[in-house]
Length: 215
Ligand SMILES: C[S@@+](CC[C@H](N)C(=O)[O-])C[C@H]1O[C@@H](n2cnc3c(N)ncnc32)[C@H](O)[C@@H]1O
Image 1 (cartoon, protein in one colour):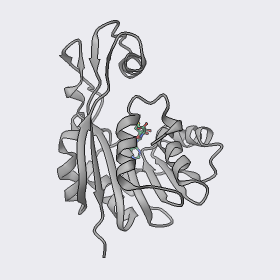
Image 2: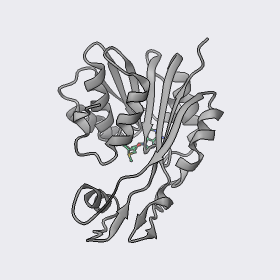
Image 3: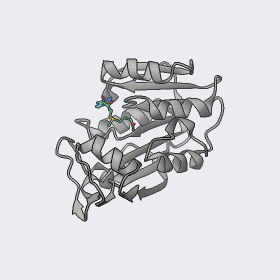
């Protein structure tokens, strides 16, 4: 799957694999919870087209401006300032998505329950969350002390089941590299550490693709 909006996103491969798994297409309605700068929202907008809709939800009001500018060419993206714990949309959606969100929230189980409540019966929930301590820089474990739940990815399948969802597929994958390139650039952005020529394995992202049971 071609995801133009994610050309520079080192985690684009797990996203493309997950979206392929759903059969998402034109006309779908989606919510991207914890949308941040809107990379995923824009990628979804390109797939669902102008007949679809993408709600880009983030608790940080500044994210709304970022998404608005990233999605300027996509009138189907609607940016909303709202906490995932209070997720409430004007309609039930086909897909509720989050990536790199649950590691930061106070109550990941509650956010997943809200995401499950946001989709139509038979609709999809996709969560992509890291196991940060499984990342490596020159063989040494990666640390992300600012995150509330840095290894939430390891718990993701059971959290998703606890939200009343059926798991359709689940896996983990991590970008890796050595020397200059997108992996080193991403690490520097995240940690302000330039790894030089050291080998880097970024934190594996656990993807869970799940479905709300049909009525
Ligand atoms: C690391 S960024 C991820 C951005 C985007 N999902 C991505 O993968 O590129 C995390 C985002 O989650 C937002 N966030 C944190 N806690 C939240 C909450 N409780 N509800 C909604 N958004 C939240 C932050 O403001 C931030 O924009």
